[in-house]
Image (cartoon, rainbow, N blue to C red; front, side):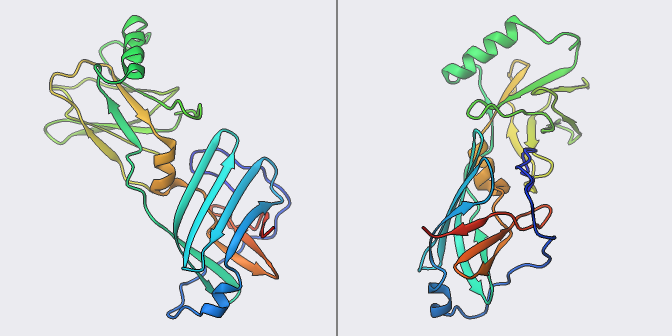
Length: 244
C-alpha cells in the first residue's frame, strides 16, 4: 500500500493483486448488510492501526494511523454479495493556506526567520516556502505554481519546502499547490498586490486526507466474519478487519 503522500506502509506477505471493484447494488438488502455491520479493527499489518465502523444506517466511519500521521474518512457503504464497497464524502477543508506576514504567531515568526536567513543563491528568483508542522512531513515533491495577470503560469516541484521561480515581467497574482499523485486539482490562492516576497504557505495534512488523499481500502472482501481490505495502488489484500 502506498500513501499518496509518498509514505510507504510496511509490505508484508500479501495475496496476489485483486482486480475489479465492488459496485453499488440497485437495491440495498437489509439482512445481507446487517450481517456485516459493526465495529472492526485492523490486524496483521505492523505499525498500522485502523478502525472501521459500518453503521446499520448505511454510513461508515474509517480511520488509519501510521507513524505520526492520522487519516480519516466517512460516507456511505454497501454490501454486494461477497464484497463491501465504500463511497467517501469529500471534505470542505482547504489543504493549503497562503499566510500573511501579519497573520498568526507561527506565520510571523517564520517570516521573520526567512527575512533574517535568506536562501543562498536565490538571486532574483521568486520564492514560495511550504511547510507542515503537525506531523513533520516532508514537502518534497509538492507541486507549486505561480500565475501572472496575463494568464502565464510556472510550475515547479518544491525541494525541502522551497519552490523557486524564474523572474518575469510583472508580479504573480495567484499561488497554486497540489500533491501530484493525490488526484486533487491545484488549489489556487490570491496574492495581495502589495505582498512582500518570499511567500509562506502552510499545508494541512488532515485537509488533504478529507479531500481525497486518505489511503482507505478500494473495497473489502467478505471472508467468514472478517473483512479483507483491498488497498489502492497495488490492489493487494493485506491485513484483516475483525470485530472484537
